[in-house]
Image: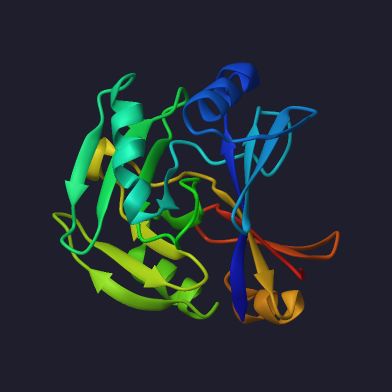
Length: 227
């Protein structure tokens, strides 16, 4: 039903300050628009957005970039010169965590395809939800599948076009928090069919340019478009 994470928007207080972080430390290159800076990472567009419109970008979003195993150490060494990093070994993968200037917890983890050391895509986004069973059912109807459960407080990991973690309010690794009023875009085979699958529980269903936008019961915006 959904084939790719098309976009992820973060709310930032100062566009100049936020863009400087991503461009200086993560080597991202993009373009500026009114109240936004836009970067392409693999198949996903990362948007830094000043408060200016609805949907807003997400607040305190925890999300993860993929890099290649061979380049992971270079990212760790580079960022550790400027930041106090948290590193975690999952056994089959490793990740480093750093907060950006607006409190978004940025993870860089192994598992990306072979490349030249650049970040290769976004592989995980964490959303804060109030009612976990309700949220799991909502996203399963969009084609996501449960792959893991657990933690000190209940959380669920879902596999799909991006790994999606649904957390009750809590702190994770590196004191990361799940996103509030996230703004996610997905490529859909049929935007209308995707919206119809959850329309009975969505707080909003609206036609947009090239697709359909819904707001889930926790206030997260999902926009479905054809590529």
